[in-house]
Length: 136
Image 1 (cartoon, rainbow, N blue to C red):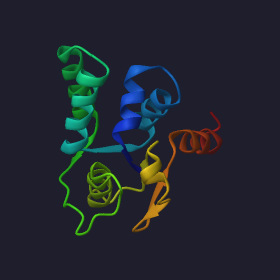
Image 2: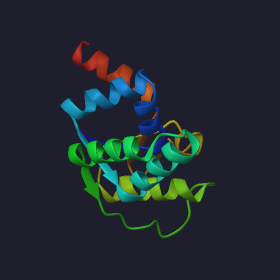
Image 3: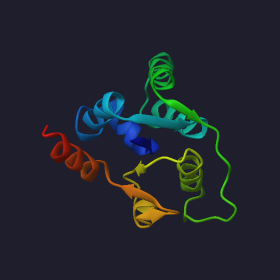
Image 4: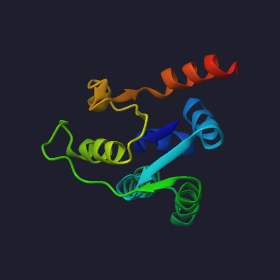
């Protein structure tokens, strides 16, 4: 399965052990994770500015993600969809990558539930589905 993680899920995966980190680790092994430069840039900026991570540590995180994911070059949406224009970049990335699902904790994306056939799912819901499917 082709998975796209929203920035908020990646942040959670790298700042604390829990659902998002377990799901990310699982998807590294069991699925194909896709990323866009826009999400990487937002991740870098938030980890450094909001969470005060040292730049060297964030460089390691970004490098790890780049080595273990497929990079998507995305085409911006033709019309704005979300209240927050940043979310349009995430949607455009996921759609351009032709992924099977977008994992997000952002209510502005989750309220859509589905965009152009792309399911938008909470990390906890997807993780429960994966555990049931695989018997974890």
